[in-house]
Image (cartoon, rainbow, N blue to C red; front, top):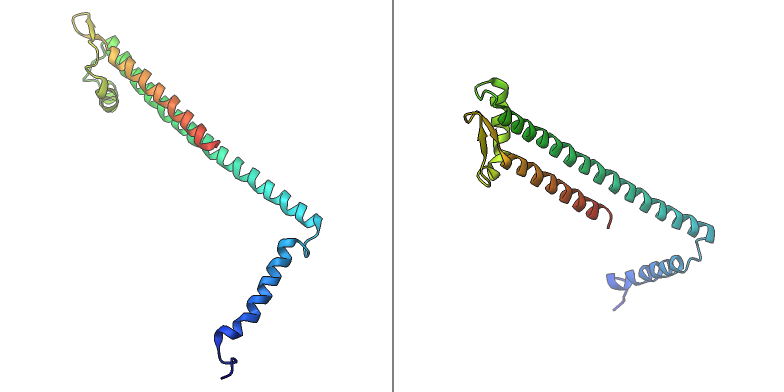
Length: 152
């Protein structure tokens, strides 16, 4: 029997040629030192670009978190101000602020007692102030986490 029809036998010379070519490129015989230096410089440049992109994305995400928490703080601050000044709850604006801020102040609603004065019209709701502090601390923690993840 001849080995010319055997597919395994036919592929062996090609495999040997590929192995020789791979060995040549690994040893660098086909690449000049200038080309190696340029390749290394390009790799370093690509790493710098990736790091800059990662930092940019993390900064944008951190800014977004800050913006959202600032909006929440303003909303809760308006709620506190309206409660302290005894704003009419039936007023469209006051009612809108109360309804919009309710989901964010509800987890803290009966944590502490409230101080009512002027016949119960004005309410000093320390729970809203506590909620504002908690959300601010959560924002700081999230921003630290973003910083840790972005700069490994």
